[in-house]
Picture 1 (tube, rainbow, N blue to C red):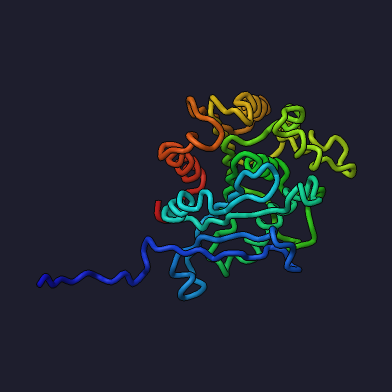
Picture 2 (picture 1 turned 180 degrees about the vertical axis):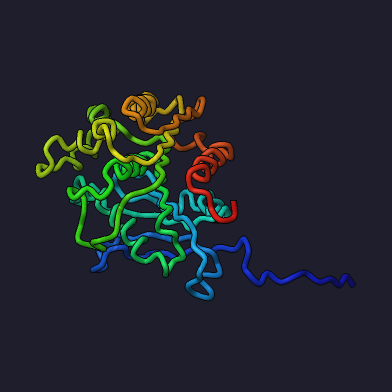
Length: 285
């Protein structure tokens, strides 16, 4: 017989849980207007705590439809282990009668929700990171460029800001206009067009929305050099636009990488984590 003792984990160190399907609309919203939270296990078991954590707001790419929050959940859980609450946000589907700016309004509403409920979920409302992939990267770039813009506000959680303090966009769409005739995007751009927003595709193209003398957060733009869906050139074009206007931007090329798939590696996630902690260190760092 082998007998031994191990110490208990009284503070649940390194343990996290997922709180799924939280509606971020004050009236309950639609089925897709929900987010999933990765939070310290102690918060799930014991309730609110005096300790707070920066929050990573993540939007999975989906062609402006509805993303699968399970796609990157394991990798995002690693961010939680580094000292962040992670909010995985879904938004309304352009193919279900929700043209631009529905997806952007939803992401902004989710950010205001998180600030409004910061105490409940142990969130540091002054440290909000926007992270997105593909169309989710497009959403987060726009969030970074349009903080508290009344054009994209809804009545939910009025008085709370929708700004983010850091933007990380992975193979994000920065120029929708350039994609409108690409076969993979013809149908979705037709669904996104909105007569209430003239030149819709320009309004939803971050490269067209950079303005001088604004207070933009630092941007990390990452893109695979062999992307067969969103052309690689979109990333340096956006980076150059931000840099030319005097904003902080870091451009990272993932050599030989396609869209999603082989783009991801431990080195990519390490770069994301280091960029975030450079600008918004957690208490444990």
